[in-house]
Length: 216
Length: 216
Image (cartoon, rainbow over all chains, first blue to last red; front, side):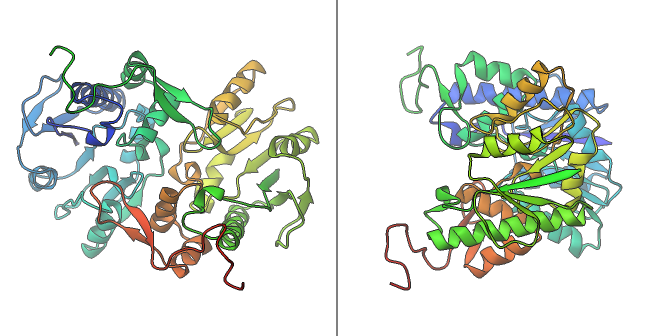
């Protein structure tokens, strides 16, 4: 089965701008991509990267400059089954990813926190994606409209994409790969001192977007 | 197996004070408790409530005014196996809860978002709890120190406790019980208009803590 990992090569992870400088965010995005590719391989798959620009990566790569939906839809139109796994899932172990391939439904969805769709698998030739807004709900509706059966993968690991600062705590708590080590090397640490959920802090502040780069 | 659901009867869910008045937060806590009890029963269990004060609830109840850790430890000291399931898990379907009882490990942990432990099962007579801070990590360490085997349940439904406003979006997106209906009745709706994750908004503002009560 084709397993595709979309990757936005430019300006990734802007919602982490309070913690990481632009170059760091690009580095983080690449480290997370490498973790996802490795986990997919360890789960027995041969993932491909679908990137907005040419990047140096240890996997077959297709470059498609169009927005995410158009690029993924082009892959789906070329034939099914296809699995699409987001590149920012550093908690996704091989075991967690393997669960995406278990249900025999026409469409399998792994919801992301906040209504996203962090991984999906389609065996239905007419299913197309819409990753904006509450895509998990929209993808369910689209499958329903096609008369396609739907299964859901209930996984905290697959639900945890890294978009916001609080997500970094999940990567430190549950990550097993290079992303966790990268975060630790940047001085990002768990902060369990508060009253509620564990958060993160950073030993040395980020170079903020708009600040002079370190080499300047 | 004893299945215990701890419940703090006073001043619940203070981190939702921006959305709900104190009486509403108490109501929400009770509706979520009812959902968890119903799901546990539908999964074939006979849950008991471990409450800080006498409440009117359709389940056997033990009142223990002590803090959470002491009250739960008293239950564990009375004999194992015991499962402890938090009362604020409105996404916890019977299928999701059933997964807690599958692994044959000495200690089974379902991590909550932000490092908590939303459900656990212990068959080890010496295991005791510590729900403060990064309890998932601490519980793993305690089990390790006892030489107890540990299994983890990777579930978004069990990981999603309702503590903060963004959690309400998960209840609206994935909830199947009374909590979702209660939120909808209060005018809490999904807001998918933003750029990132879906959030919630409320049609009519909450009476804020410190404001005069409606009956005043």
